[in-house]
Image (tube, rainbow, N blue to C red):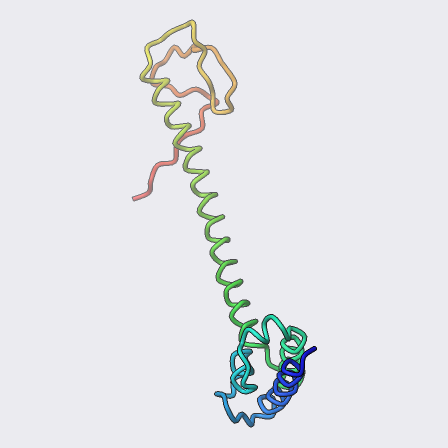
Length: 154
């Protein structure tokens, strides 16, 4: 390790101590990597790439010494909560659309069966998809195996 990197590590550890005791000299005092880099006088990417062990040590010390969750982790947790709510809402919407498609398919089958001229060579299809003979003597009477389409209330 070069002397420059060793000097950075010393400055980063001193900056950690100042931030964790609430005595910042160069930064706003927030417990973030950006504030740590400013406090130590190093580029933020030095912490992200070269001194990842010090970055992890800082997060661990923030968690244990201040009993706080690091700001980045708080943001990630909020994002996860939002995404979970979104996924749940989308799953509910998909289920209601599935039911709507089923109901519309059944309604379409009923309407096309009633509208089609009586053709004895083609069997009609019931709600379960099985074939049955088109044997209705009463054109106004619905077959026994027909699932009714729900009517909108109001």
